[in-house]
Amino acid sequence: MSVVNLDLELLRTFVAIVERESFAAAAESVHRTQSAVTQQMQRLESQLDKTLFHKKGREKRLTEDGLKLLEYSRRLLALNDEACSAIAGSTLTGEVRLGAPADVADSMLPNLLQRFSKAFPSLRMTIDTGRTAFLMQAMKRGEIDMTISAREHPEYRRVTLRTSPTVWMCADDYHYDRLQPLDLITSDEPSLFRTMALDHLERAGIAWRIKYVAPTLPGIRAALRAGLGITARSVEVMGPDLRVLGEADGLPRLPDVTYNLYIGSSPNPPARRLFDSLGAVRI
Image 1 (cartoon, rainbow, N blue to C red):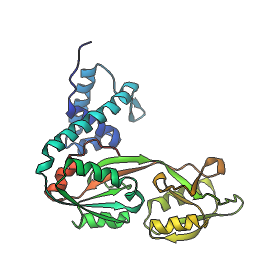
Image 2 (image 1 turned 135 degrees about the vertical axis):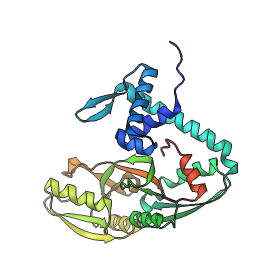
Image 3 (image 1 turned 120 degrees about the vertical axis):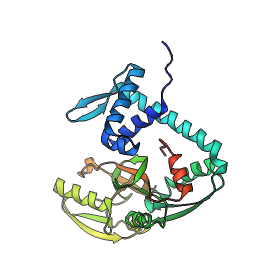
């Protein structure tokens, strides 16, 4: 079998299609027309002599060969981008202002900052943690350059960082009585997890009452540990003194949540360079 030199530009588009979940969204991400993206995938399939996508209804799903290629593509792109960043890193100076919601500050932020520091050791980072809605508004006003969000913001460029399960959780010694309305611990509005929890409880026909509302994650954790009720959050919030409730407890399955890093419309040059260096990063 002859060795094929894979085109990284084609692989980047391939990964974008998977992560943006459509050819049209990927076209916007890689700044090409949808027809150009389709032609790129035809070239990639021709290079490999494999079918990467198959149709299921109106959607295009990855074939078994496509799934194999996805992992290799991410690794190749990450290595390529890391090499480019490392070689050029010493020339990038200045400040980048990054926002992160509190529920991922402990889990995702350290790995992301470590990657930034290794690639651009002369770069100065300013971190702002808070509620997602406020961070997005701060980015819109130009007060921060980039921020992490689990919500969809199609008007901004993004890089997917991680997809995490969302679970029902409570204190380790908390007793959930199915015969009583579920005591819910939640953030105040606007909250992705509050909306998700209420929607799924309503669909499942489970009676509920809001027992405790907190504007911050430490407040939610405190209420959980005090045994005041149950909340729905991503697994990053879990701790040794908490436990997961699920379908065996009569609670509905919750959808995964995807965390993306978004960059503002008018970032400073160091922020734009840093964002472009990320490629197919997963943390």
